[in-house]
Length: 157
Length: 388
Ligand SMILES: [Zn+2]
Picture 1 (cartoon, chains in turn red, green):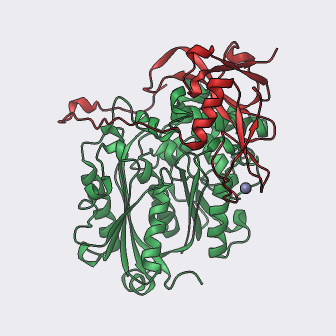
Picture 2: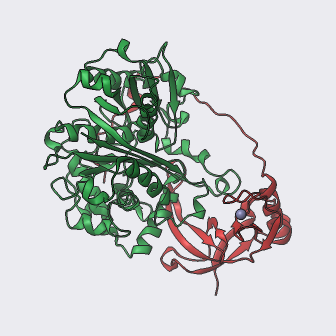
Picture 3: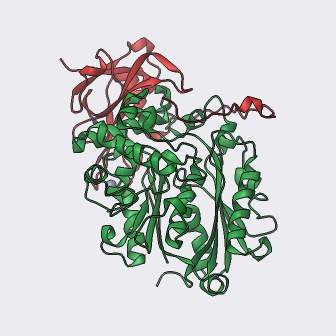
C-alpha cells in the first residue's frame, strides 16, 4: 500500500551525472589473518585481549576497551547460534528478489560480537532465534580469502 | 556550570518535505534559513556564524556538500562549519551551534540542515551500500533495511512483542502528521494496513518505514543578552548530550541503545532533570522506523526497558496523553530528509513550547521538551533538551 503522491523527477528539468569511483580495500592486519584462516584451514578465529580477557569476533588488532594490541588468537570452531535474523525480499537497488535470502547475526559462545552471514539449507519459517548453526565452507580450490569463502551457515542436525 | 553563556532559540523555519522537490539543495537551505531569520526578526547581517548539518555527500551527489551549500545557508564571508554524524546530524547540528554561542565566541548563530535525497537514483538506499564494512559485510550484499530488520527482530524477541504493538506507532505518527503543513505522509491508516503492507525484510514492512525526502530546516540561536532584547519568549537550550558506539553493530545487544542512554544522561545532568518521565512534557525521539520510537523512548529513560509498546497501546504517547511522543508526526509522517528531519524535531519542540504548534499543539502548557536523533551505523545518539 502506498500513501503518498509521488512526482516523477524525470519530468523536472535536470542534468544526468554520476560520481562513480573505484576503490581497493586492504583486508588489514587482523582481517587478513582472519580470512586466511578461513581460506587455508576452514576455521573461524577470534583475537583475545590478555588484559581484559575479551575475545573479539570478528578479530581485531586492538582492544577497544583498554587499547592493548591483540596478539593472541583463539580457534572458535565453526558452530554458532542465531542471535537475530531477517528475511530479505529486496536487493540493494530495491528490486524484488526471485527468492528471499535469510541473513543472520551469528554469535560464538562467550566471544564478543559475531558474524553476519546468510543461512542456507533452511526455510525462513524454520529459523528461530537461538538456533544452533554451523559454517558451510566452499571447497578449498574455490576459496579466495573472502568472507564469502563461507557459503552460508546451516542448522546443526 | 556548562558554558559561559545560556543559549536561546529565537526562530525556526521548515520547508515542505516531499519525495522530489524542484529546488536545489542550496535553494532548500535558503528557504528554511530565510524563514527562521524572519521568525526571529533578525537579518542575515546580524548573524555572526553559521553551522550546517547535512548527511552523506552521496545523496546530493556533490562531493564537499557542506562547502557547496554554504551560500544557500547564508554563510558566505562568515565563520562556517559543516557537521556530520549520519542520521544523528539533525539534532547534533544545533548542539554544535550551542557551543559556538555558549563559548562566548558568538552572540548569534544560524543553524541549517538540508537533505536532497531525490538526486540519487534509482533509490538513495544504494548510496548506503558503501557505509558497511568493506571486508566482512559488503561482499554479502548488505542493505540498510536488513540491518535494521535484525535489530527490530532482536527487540521483538527480547520483549516478546507482536508486530501489532509496534505498528501502532506508525498509525499514531501518520495521523499526527495530518495536522502538519509540511508533511509528506500524513494519513489515517490502521494497524491492519501496516500488517498487510509489502514485506521488505521481515519483520520490516513498507508502512513500518519513513520515506526518502527532500527538505530543509533551520534555527536561529542567540546568547541570553541578545535573546532578551529581541523576543519575549525565548526557548532555552538547557541540556545537550551526544555519544557514539563503534561501527561494529554486531558487538551490541541490539535490543537496547546504550549510546542513546549515555547521551540522554549527559543532557539530563546538564538540565538538572532527575525523573525524565515526570519532568519531560513532550518528546520527539527519532522514528525512521516505528520500532525505533519505542527503542528510543526506552534509551531516553522515558520508560522502563520493554515498556514503550504498552504506553503506546494505552494512549499515553498520543498528543493528548500524559507523555506526547512525536506530536509533529515524526519521520514516519512528516518525512525523512535525514539531517533536516532531525532538526524538524527540534523545530517542533520549539513551536510546542512557545504554544505556536497550531493544530498539533499538545495541551497542558508544556515547559520542557526533548528531541533526539540517531544514526551512523546504528551507533550514534544526539539529545537536546529545551525549556521556556
Ligand atoms: Zn583489553
